[in-house]
Length: 280
Image 1: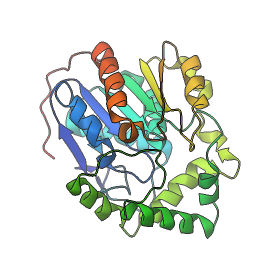
Image 2: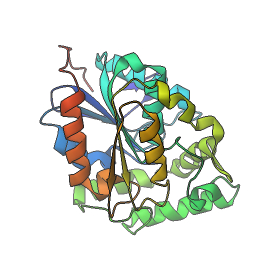
Image 3: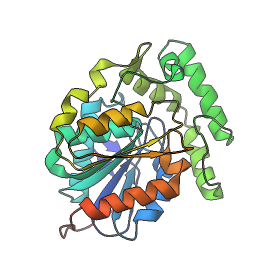
């Protein structure tokens, strides 16, 4: 699908209330494979590759946070959807939060999974990524590890499906991936941590969207304390902490993550309006 002159890859599976899945920095739709399977029988599950990630076009410049939130609204428009629930991990969580703050009338529910934008603290690795010369070297190393199925950011990743691995190995070696990851990291992080301009703590008390916050207790990239802060500040928010889980609950503790997410959406998401499905 072409959205604002960018060709975006997406998966659109199932029927029911619409749920949009937004991955983190440098990831892809494959990161949601367990969640898609768990939700597809009760929801219309839509996962997309953000610009410059997976198999989506990058464009000349990576969109800003606000531009990405608006891009998601244009994406919904292209699908013929007035409203949807949004689930985001890491930087994708911040994108979903920004979308909820800018366009609350378009969201049914919000799930923040180890989300960025909720405090300054972030791992020293990502602070170093923002440095000239060293940053691209670190990301190239991590991409090399990922392309060979070697451990990198995860506590305990699940699954080894050959077709998923083949797809991930294809996009993880795209020549502009390092440039995309470094560019996005520099938008949101400096040597002091997450940049003040991406923090949304002051806006959380005004968030009206039903919100579930999920965090791994072993997340060394963004600390679980950020999830506790969001839970305290967002009116009516729910918090789930997953033991023996790192920064990507949908991959590392898929059964627990999918169970709490499914229950939350079943309770909070309204039935869908009758809308035609767009072609992909």
